[in-house]
Length: 208
Image: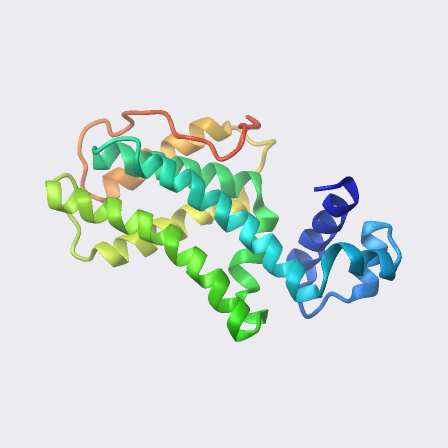
């Protein structure tokens, strides 16, 4: 992507996260990116195209990282710990992406929404599979694997709302803490932190 394209995407991410898709106008986008409206259209297509691109970029990154983890080992607790660590790290480092992906799906037309939801479902299916595997192997003890998946994803995504790089706990330590907590919630006893959490992007170890 060109530097101008990156400026457009960065401006859209900030405005969509702050004002919402429908609350952001083309003129505001152009001004925020430091471009004319005509130049903006060249780099974004329609405003909905731009929103879908932002969402796809975020979700495809998660899917790639999740699929790598899913194929890394047969051990369900290790895979679950790595999924949690990766998800926490990604959401803490990219809070604006999280807000846009989670809050603006309703703004899409039905066909574009289906496209984005299919990616989200593909990612969540990786979590569902590892939880199902852990239940089947006897490592996890949960009444409902689907509820466990939803609860863990909600818990891990929440770091995007409160993580502070200037705080007292580094991001790597936070990811490991979340991995251990997730495994305890699934009924794993002992020390569940068997492997370091994988990263979606290089960790910028600011404290929490």
